Structure formats: C-alpha cells, structure tokens
Length: 110
Image 1 (cartoon, rainbow, N blue to C red):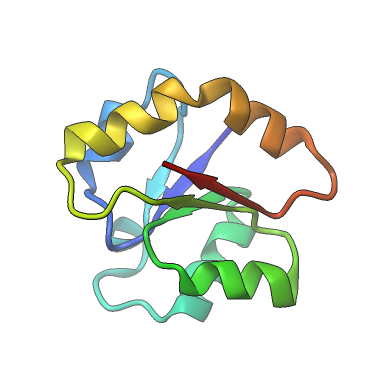
Image 2: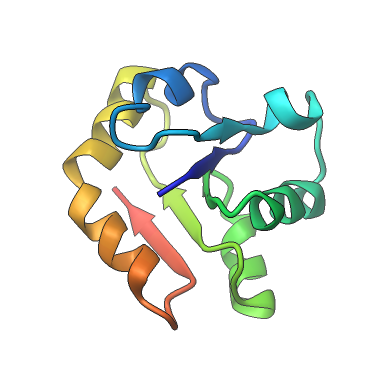
C-alpha cells in the first residue's frame, strides 16, 4: 500500500511510516509547495497512492469523482507528527480493508 501525503501533513511521515507503507510520497517532494487540490488528486492517481490528507475538501472530490485515488482523511485537529504517525499504525488493518474494497473511496481516521 502506497500513500501520498498532502501538504498539510509532515514530510517526515514518509520516512516514519516506511515499514508499513514503503515507497510512499509527499506532495512537496513531487510538486513543491502550494499544489492545487486537483494537482494533488491527479498525482495520487498517477502514482497509485492512497491520498492521505487533513483537508476535508478531498471528501467532496472523492464523492463527486470517485476513485482513483482513494482518500484517507486524518481527523485529528491540531496534533503532533507523532500523533499522526500513530493513527495509520493503529488502523493499519482498516486501511488494508479500505484499499481492497472495490467500491470504497473515502476513509476517515480519528
């Protein structure tokens, strides 16, 4: 399972989660800062990634456009990078089921 982290999440997550999500990417490493939502969406699809974001705008995109990419919405509010790192670790099996489900397009993690 490969992830693309949105700009609102730390680039450190790529390295911190490499044991569970190898070859994951961060939007700033692909495109730099300030990428439009459509660009982030397109890059996630092109690279075969689940899009991980704290931006609820992607929920609307996943409803209107469907997958790919599938969207994982991190609903933690203000938090540390360590807290964000722990969420996909704790919910790894749920993420695997989400990725495998043919019709699912959006997963909220809190």
